[in-house]
Length: 477
Image 1 (tube, rainbow, N blue to C red):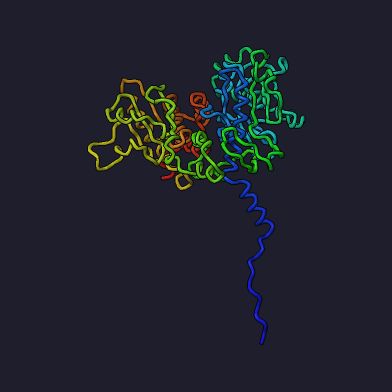
Image 2 (image 1 turned 120 degrees about the horizontal axis):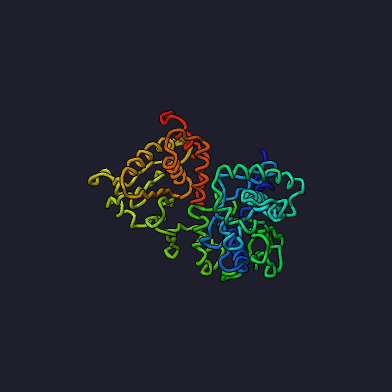
């Protein structure tokens, strides 16, 4: 009789599977939260050394996790600084950074990277190129004032810095041709911008004049703060955030907030991270930290994000997130307030708008409310383009009356679809509908970003705005 087969044993995990499991454990949600919180503590300490009133900008998106809560934002893309692809973007002018830095005497820009480098490309190359271009556009001659020239950190090879410097003059000429630089020129009339860098490897920052006494310098320091430098000694013994109430060890993650879409649970972003931080001292374990930051925000009553300002008291045009709309807006619409036009540039209704879209309600939607129904995604790649004619018709009807027109555009994120519709409105109001070119739209977008620095129209939506003015509306019907 044949011997029976040996009992099956569990398969031994492969080396790659074991490494993935270890990486997953090391990069847990709690480890990320504690890594970000520890780095944010350091950023806050750096910001405290600067004179009162020095603006601290969060470079989107990663920097917003590390900068102080409510910090203003800027948008310098790392890809604009990639080797051989250096670019000064008119779509990301960031003029507000230069103007506010000039008024305060300095500014800090916070960002981080998980790439194992001490500085993200946005801080090491994109920001220096931006500063040099703005200096030249404002009238500074780098040959006469070395502070106005391109300055890069020591890690950038001299040959690359030389090639980058060759891009400055053409970019400054393009900027001068596309935008009104009077405000920028006035702001930089006495001192040029100069970029400096600081990371956690630096010591004695309290004795650094660029940070503590910028007014004594012959330039305006733009201090790039690399929030999360590679610190190998912290990978085994973690840095504990000051607000943590229990002792623990975890694997420190450099740039833990980078690429949040790959790791953050639904509802967790930079804003809700800062909103939940006050509850961190209440956590008693890593599991509780993970639960706290993974829970839907609505279940945490103490974390309420208030609107920053009422659009009803803003200027003639306003761009907002749907969640920030004040409750007094809806009665104003129902009362048919003259000159007010509220445009929803999404496929989601705000709670106060449900009454206007309900087919069973009496009457019709108020004349000051327009629902463009613009979803996102490839299936809806013509939705904004098709909606723009309705927007322009509503603008024409609204401008036919005497009261000054007040426009409010909103969408869930408050910077893409709403800004694209605002751009279309601004083009129509300034230039009409005939003879509008892509150059006209580009120049108007530069103006829009100066009015609303948070505006960041996606390339796909920008193309739809271009087509809406330069081709037939029914081209894709």
